[in-house]
Amino acid sequence: MEKQSRKKITWTIKNFSSLQCQKLCSDPFVVARCKWRLCTYPKGKNVDYLFLFLEVADHDSLPCGWRRNARYSLTIVNQNSVKRYRQNDEQKWFDEKTPRRGRVSMFPLNEIHAKESGYLVNGELKIVAEIEVIEVLGKFDVTEETSTITETMDVNGFQLLPSQMELVSRLLKRHPDIASDFSTKNPNLRTGYMSLLLSLIETLRQSPHQLSYTDLVEADAALESMTNAGFKLDWLEKKVDEMAEKKEKEEGGEIRVREIEEELKDLKQKCSDLEVQLEKEKLELSAANAPISFDDVM
Image (cartoon, rainbow, N blue to C red; front, top):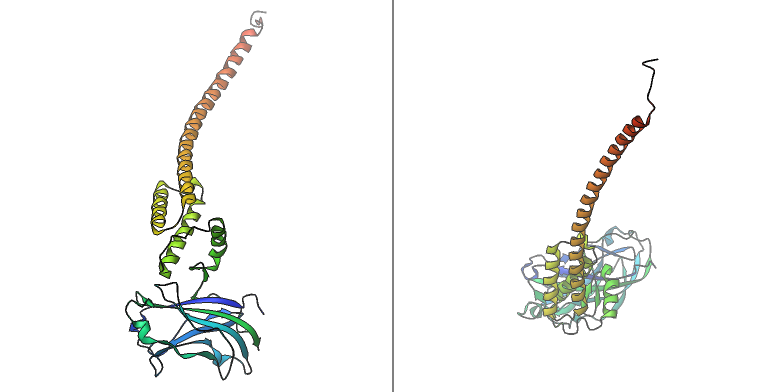
């Protein structure tokens, strides 16, 4: 099986309550060189429950005899709590007769729409699917391609992009209590704060010459915001102070370099003038030392 046989997909459905369509599907995404998509019936399917399922994308165009064995789980995210409603993991075969898998009675719609339930925040419903392709019979659909769906991974309650995993893992290993007092449960805010922290670190990794004083003021404001939210960032505050000191030294050093360059330029010009004067004096000295000529009288 291909290396990318597992993926975690986050599907955000905007304006969920006002959707009028009977069926809604996510953009296709690729797992193990097979195209999939998530689908749901926002108004239910003849029942007052959310019908959510995983489907083989473009299954009608696949050659006869295709089969795929996949282990998957579907999660509706409670955005105001670390707890989630989660469907039990299932492992099923997908084929021509059964190109989609899911449950009609996965979740009551009245609970999703309930005020302050936490499942709808700013009108958005978040669904997370974890998919592992076990076996594929028949040709693969495509090579790995870019999807508009955001693939994320959960680390200590933070939803991270794969590109962020290494840095955050090293960060949590070095500072395990970094978010011990961070009480925000909303996953959007948690992800936002973590992204802000990573952006600040990347900013401070630049050379002082690349940063402006405005950048440092904004970095200090971002640090204060994260500290007020409960992050323990004493180590990062030292880095901000260190960068501010380096920036000050860098600016002072640039001024001194310019002054020395101007002074050196003047000295070089003086040296050049002295060299010209020296050559002139040498010529005059040579003329003075020459014997007197009697050619004009003899």
